[in-house]
Structures are given as structure tokens and as C-alpha cells.
Image 1: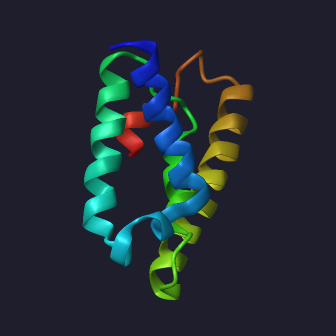
Image 2: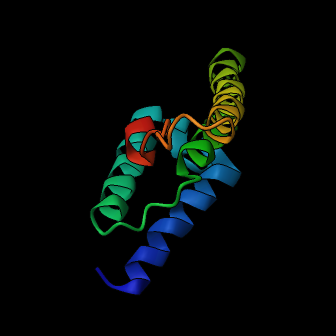
Length: 108
């Protein structure tokens, strides 16, 4: 995959993070989910999927007009922060070098 395509896919993910569902006509979750899946899988295949993608996608889904839908992803972001700090504490207290982090693709 060319650098231009990789950069375009990463840019697509960042645009989704900042604009969320507002960029999709009719705010169609099914459409954006398919697009995000394609971008994430493509980047993962060439080992260029950024670690922050999971959080970026969660933040993107909080940018919508449906408050109930938004709350679900806000709660997932809070849980992500809790998990991050919990795993950081576990790693710094040393569990014989074991890694407790999931891959970015598995989280998504």
C-alpha cells in the first residue's frame, strides 16, 4: 500500500474523530461503521494502524445529536481511561514483564 493511501486512511480516521457522525448524510451509523472497518483493517494489514485509533473512533461516535447514543460512547471513553490507568499501574508495579494491553484492532 502506498504512503499516500496510508496517509489518506489515517486522515479519514482523524476527520471522523473531529466531526463524528455529522460528516455522514443522514448520520447513518451503518455506513460509517463499514467505512471505519475498511480503513482500520487496511491499516492493520500493513502494520500502520495507530495505537490511538480506538479512542479516536470512540470520540467520533460521541459527536452526534442522539444523546442516548452519545452517552454509550462517552462511557466507553471513560472506561478506556480507567483501563489505561489500571494497566499502567499493573505494568509499573511489574508482573514479571507480562503485557496486559490488547492490540488496537482487537479493541475496535
